[in-house]
Image 1 (cartoon, rainbow, N blue to C red):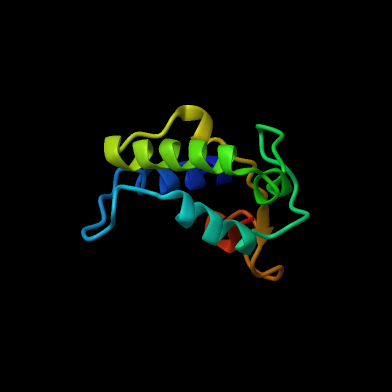
Image 2 (image 1 turned 90 degrees about the vertical axis):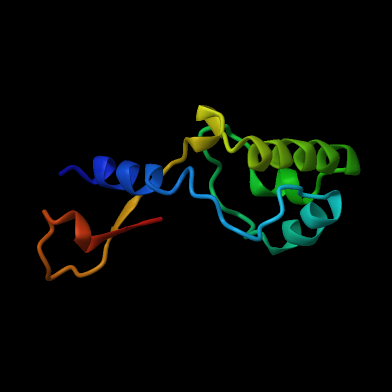
Length: 107
């Protein structure tokens, strides 16, 4: 099995998982509370948006993020664009079987 196929199946198996007791509303306060905890200087994803663009955003951005993330939770659907990411396989054990996908972790 290819590494990309392995991680795609792993990700897709968890997409529609409903978690009991989790609110389907994300407030602006939730956004504002979590943003400072994001790691800085990470490479951008396929969208080209840097973490710092969110961290140093304005209340207008936070309002839109709040609405968008709440819709995702309420509808239980993510746009295909939001499911895209850049994943790099990192070897767990260099002395292990390098052809075994279980010997890699995604970063």
